[in-house]
Structure formats: structure tokens, C-alpha cells
Image 1: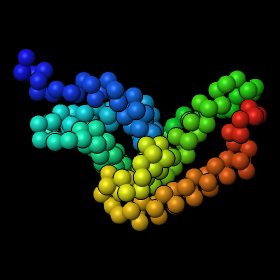
Image 2: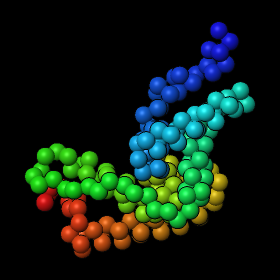
Image 3: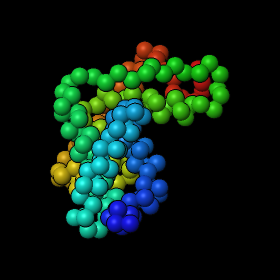
Length: 174
């Protein structure tokens, strides 16, 4: 009985927000398996500090998730991630959104860690600049400039795909 009360609310948090947290972790890591591992590590840290956290436990979990992701990127250094290649469909078949999403994950994988984290926070999590800065422990100006550079780099990457006749993500299914 003591164990159930010790983590009271954890099961509700995971049930209600688990899918969104996993989606964020997958975007940060580039694969489902790595995302699951990242989320598990963040949950373990949350549970270790559960009794000391007053207030927003999901916020603590999200900050932990981002910090662990950045730690992994730093350890990994400049080793590039290898993601599966995506081939566009021959005919429009309703999977264009899936292909576009995979292309976005591949494009995000080309960015430096901080740019990736800022773009995920701002445009996937839809946090404000101030909220993103608080999560990452930096200034609002840093979030603005990093987001600008990250979006610019994503434009360069996707423009190179179009020049190379790489995956056509225009929805035409060509």
C-alpha cells in the first residue's frame, strides 16, 4: 500500500500525457526505440525525485527529457545519426503525411542539438519563446536566434532535396 501512495498521480500522468511525451522523445532522438529509452530514463529520474517535486511534475519530466537528450547528443559528439531512407509513393495513397513527417525527422537529425531542441519545443510542443528558454535554461534571445538559424538550415536541407529530385513532399505523390 505504501508503494501506491508513494507515486500517487504518476499513473494518471503517464496515461494522459504518455503519448505526447513519447512523440516528443521520438522527435528528439530520431527513432522510436531511442525515444522510448529516453522517456524511460526521464521517468526513472522523475520517480527518484518524486517526493521533492512540488507543483508541475509534467514540466519537470519535460525538462528532464530535453536535458537528457542534450546530454546524449554531447556524448555522441559529431557522430551522425543514421535514419531510414524514405521513398515517396508512386501514386497518391494517403501516406503523404507520414512521408512528410519522416522527412521532417530526417531533416531535424541534420541539425545541431540545440537547434533541434529549440525547434521541437517551439513548433512541435508549441511553447512560447519564454517557456522554451526556461526549459533549456537560456535567454529568450538565444531561443529566437537559434530558432531562426534552425529554420534557415531546414530550408537549406529541404531545398537540396528538391534540387536533387529527392523525396517530393509536395503532396502530389510524384
